[in-house]
Length: 295
Image (cartoon, rainbow, N blue to C red; front, side):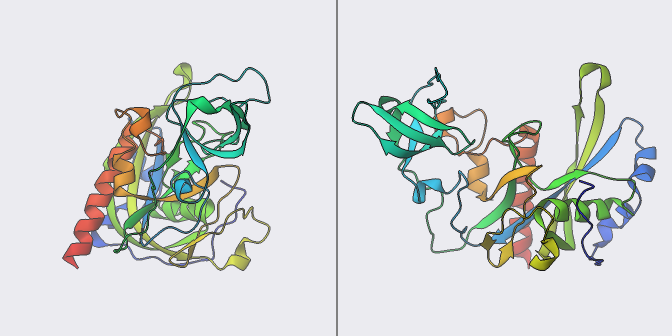
């Protein structure tokens, strides 16, 4: 996202097994002629309970939350369409069998038949006696490609990035306002995927890394699209509205329960960008926990 300035000049720790990535991405791709574009991703973990949030992962503890039992097609602009398994907040009840609802996974609201709704009793963010490990997820803008899907921070390497690892730091800052302090490890060997129309398909390679972060001082963000600053364990997240509309701190169980092979009513409310990405998130959790126990 070129409109966002780079973070203040910082250095970050690079472990020995990632030193080979201290090269510009174009040099890296010379040995990989099958790849047209390099994409990077950052896994940010924290330990603790999430803050109050309007994200779909924590609404059931704070809102008058219901789940749709059936699909409902809206017939006019005053009605709100439903998909089986979808979570909504009930704003107003009418004795004639219609309730005014607001969808959590998009900005729609309107009237829906109350008979199509059942109260949601599962609390996705119930407090626990031990802090849970959570992964930072971002929800893509509803106006972007693949709208409303969830992913980790990241994006394309740029020619102006000194190295591939600087690409990770830049993308993390642009999308969350966080400063990358340390690379912990690479997660997986890379995911290859294709984008674009059939006639102009590009083959991409995505490299992902677990990283440790800190905040950029909030004064640095003034005038740069700051729209969110909720805190978890003193970590403030700043989203840019052109790319992402929401963030959440997901547990490993959340990611497991987002399996697309589950019935929609049994899934957690995260539609992950791709199944490959979801499986990589689970691998990242496994590596992170193994690293915690070995310390």
